[in-house]
Amino acid sequence: MNEQDIQQYLIVNKEESFSGGKLGAQTAHASARFERALRQDASIPLFDQILYDEWVQGLEKKIVVKGKRSLLEKLESEGWIAVRDSGLTELRANTLTVVISPPMTKGDAPKWLRKLQLYTE
Image (tube, rainbow, N blue to C red; front, side, top):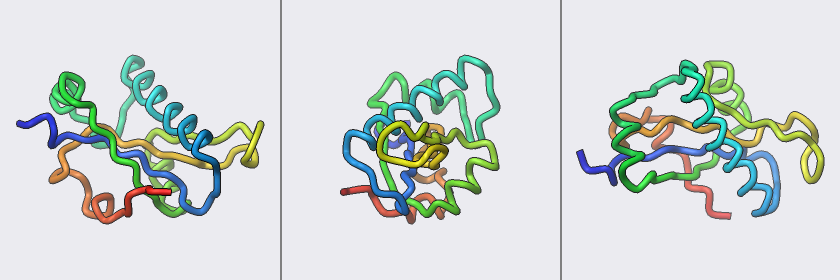
C-alpha cells in the first residue's frame, strides 16, 4: 500500500472560536495523547497496527476537518481520543476542542468522516 493513502484525521469543534495558536496547541495535545494511548495499550476504535506502522514509516499525513460539538461528544463517548481545554486562556474549562482518529486509508474512513469539511480558517 502507498503510505500517502494513509492519513490521520483531527476533527476540530467548529462551534467554538479560537486562535491559530490555540488550534495548534489543541491538535498537538491530541497527537500526543494518541501516542501515549498506544504506549499504554489503550483500546482505540478503528486502530490497525499494520496501517499505523506503514503511516509512521511514511509521511504521517494528517487531515484537519471540522465537526459539530455533538459529533465530537459522540466520538468521545465511543472511546475516541479527545481533548478538552483547561480554560486557562481563550476557552471555558472543559470545552471539547479536538477528537483524533487513528491512521486509516481514505477508503477505510467512515463515510461521515470523509464528508467533513477541511478546516481552513
